[in-house]
Image (cartoon, rainbow, N blue to C red; front, side, top):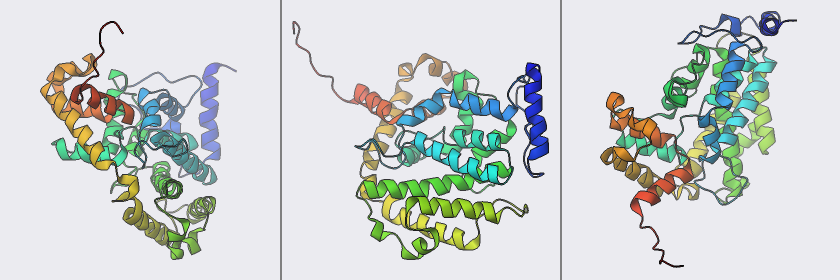
Length: 339
């Protein structure tokens, strides 16, 4: 068997095994810059691999999910959140005979554009960057332009799923729609887990009407939501959705989390500081563009200092943003000569 036949065999398996509603890699709308096909991997497998090997993906391990720089090793980061989304989404895609590779690629890339300090950093940039800032648009900007200086040149379907994983628009593929719901399933449940671990919530505070429908334990709630997604969408008609009772309970639980965790809770006590840090270093780079790394300085003439400073800061991890702030705004310790 030749190497080229490996990819062709995979594409043939997709044609034979996947649902008629699945997005097949051989039928992709393609890439902005045409490329020679890989002899082993399908187009969506290549996209998944490019995302995993990117610097943006590696930085997710030191970016906030909910708790800003938590004291403890077991709180979620943006990377562990991404992996949980991918696991949930792949399970649903496989059960529905949809394209698991496409689903995984979208899931792994969906949060690449998140700022340091999670949504606090996103809010800070949105307030100060005149065109506005949304992490899903920045995720697309990373894979299209910023990563490696030319972007990752991903397929249209993966890019669409990344852009529309949040917000009012529905992803064009069923695989992207699965990721959009899996994202919510993951963060609602793991944020409950982290909030209880951090003493922000107790299990007894969770709304009883939601627990009665979804389950009382972390694993039970995820299992309920995932099984419901599979059962509700097996008929193969319309967009991916939850059943009305599960959707209502999930929405109610999400509202509870906004009221008790996401806004004004102990988990958010560092948000004001985080916003201040982001906005101060943004202002610094506008005033001192020579302090930007060389690859960013080169882009300021074409794209403007505001856009470039926003890109640079959005890519920072929590701890790197703090180091940058300390470098420019805190006095350095004095070391006496001879010691």
